[in-house]
Length: 68
Image (cartoon, rainbow, N blue to C red; front, side, top):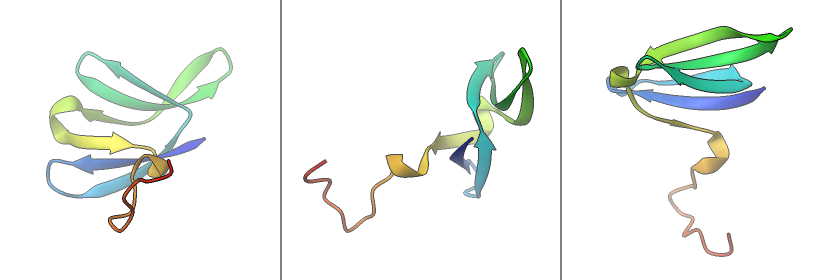
C-alpha cells in the first residue's frame, strides 16, 4: 500500500492508503487489489481535487532540490 496525500479544493488534506489509483468517468479512485479485481477504498470527483501525490513527491520548503 502507498500513502497518497489528497488536497481538496476546500483546502483540506486527506491521507489515503491505496495500491492503485485509477480515473474513471471524472472520478479519481483509490483502490486495493483483491483477488482478480480492485476494491475502491476512496473516490473523489476530479472537480473536488486540487492535487494529489505520494509524500516523497513533495520537498520541504527549505530544500532546494539540489542533489536529487
